Image 1 (cartoon, rainbow, N blue to C red):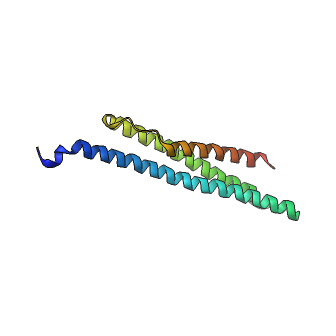
Image 2 (tube, rainbow, N blue to C red):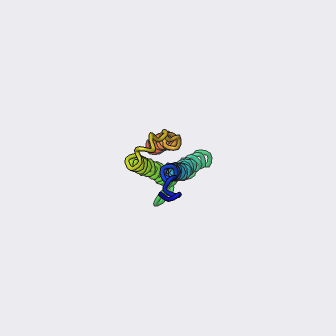
Image 3 (tube, rainbow, N blue to C red):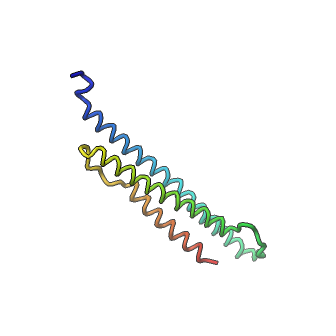
Length: 132
């Protein structure tokens, strides 16, 4: 038995932990990006809505107005975050199945935050969509 193989279980445990934490960091990065897209889309919509109300701007037809741009931005944010959550869950399921002996894994705070942010994004999308 070589010296390196004696530490294999500990090395594998650390590798699994690093991989799990890398997935957490990736999900947090997607959460930040999605939050920026959602808030920027909502801000664009509200800014131009307030501008139209204060200035009484005429309704000039555009290819995509502020409401449509806001909906696209919010939709991109929510969609990307939901996709990232689904991918995260699949990656963690695979990691858990491959390395059951190193589990159970802790619940993810990042996944909980991403779920809340996606719920708020869906709410924002619905509010902007229903508002004429």
